[in-house]
Amino acid sequence: MEQRINVDRIEQAEELFGSFDSNIKLIEKEYGVALVFRDSELKITGEDPAGVDKAARAVRSLITLTGGGESLSEQNVRYCMRMVDEDSEDKVAKLAGDCICLTSKGKPIKPKTVGQRTYCDDIKSNTITIGVGPAGTGKTYLAVAMAVTAFRAQQVNRIILTRPAVEAGEKLGFLPGDLQQKVDPYLRPLYDALFDMLGAEAYQRYVERGSIEVAPLAYMRGRTLDDSFIILDEAQNTTGEQMKMFLTRLGFNSKMVITGDVTQIDLPDGKRSGLKEAVRVLRGVEDIAVFRFTEKDVVRHKLVQDIIRAYEKAARPKN
Image 1 (cartoon, helix red, strand yellow):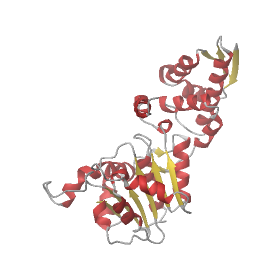
Image 2 (tube, one colour):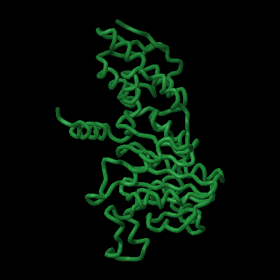
Image 3 (cartoon, helix red, strand yellow):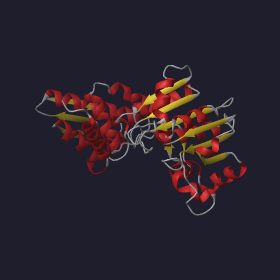
Image 4 (cartoon, helix red, strand yellow):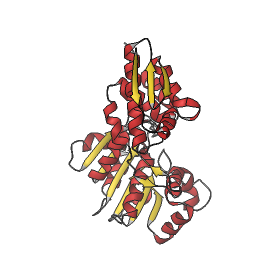
């Protein structure tokens, strides 16, 4: 059994094959096929017609991505193959050429999965978006990218990033140093995302002007946040009272994004997660979106997906 696919440009073929043919080797191994490129034509051969068909569909999806200016990596090759296995490869076209913003070094930040694309669309379309899902799905990073985009377009005047500073109740007093030194270790992931997108110098300049604020959740109390893009990270470690307090800080012409992973709750026993409660209470409220990531949206090492699947399997009730 064989199929042939025309590849117009040699540059596209080079991108498709990858360094040392790494991309093609993934497809060959997954579907039990052989791929050979000659005279602007890619020939796919194999004994199993279904395997050849899936390989051809995966290649066409990857060509769609490269045609939209995407660079291929192991992550998006595996993602395309997974979408083929689910008969959903037509959705991959939505990811081609879609750039949220540029980092300080000019690198484009783009959704890498259909789930990430939907999450970004939800943030654009709603005043409050709650993103729930496992580690490595880009919940926080993409939210910061959307905030920077809105800030650069002057849609908001401030970016405010916050998270519960200490998982078991924000007890910072025993730590040495001033407030900033106390909370820095807990807010580091947010700093890293901002440094990546703005550069350290621009970040510092915006902080001094008050245009960017990174603070523990406890310091949100009593404020009304107008003209702001507000992100609450690690929201699974808020209590119900803290979550309600945060949500009611919303002012005019502001957006909120709340992110968290309900499988990593560090609250003391008996304390209910404010994130879980918010998802339940706010379901169906107009202008509030709840998006649930899955392990399919993990964009870290493949093993991270495998680890998440293993833990989900172990958590299922035994019959």
